[in-house]
Image (tube, rainbow, N blue to C red; front, side, top):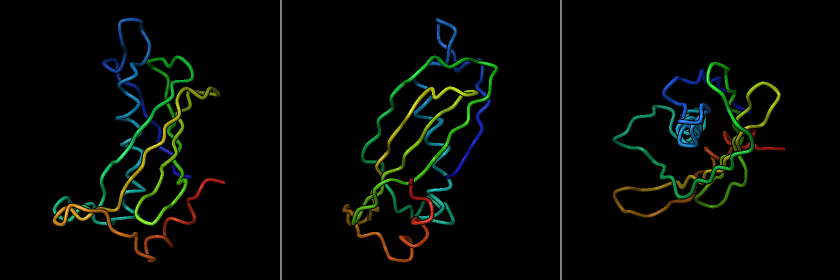
Length: 130
């Protein structure tokens, strides 16, 4: 599991005074960086090998400004050319949001998916959710 602590910003709040639903996709993307590094250690954009194919977020509880939020990240199912990234957001002892993102190993020049190489699969395996 990877973990990232987010300090919510005042501008992450909405008119009701809690964290806006729009903050979670941004926070989840930021917390996927260690997964990106498993696929592409240099994180260089000119040869980036991933594309986001799907993302869903389930909001579980209200989240508040001025209290840190921990984003926990694991890998789910790893397919031939894609991998699921499972994420949870916790504020204190409360699960406040869950997310799933599907990343596809992608060749931008050919505009098609590619099989995930075995060397990358080996790096991904230790981070599979139990």
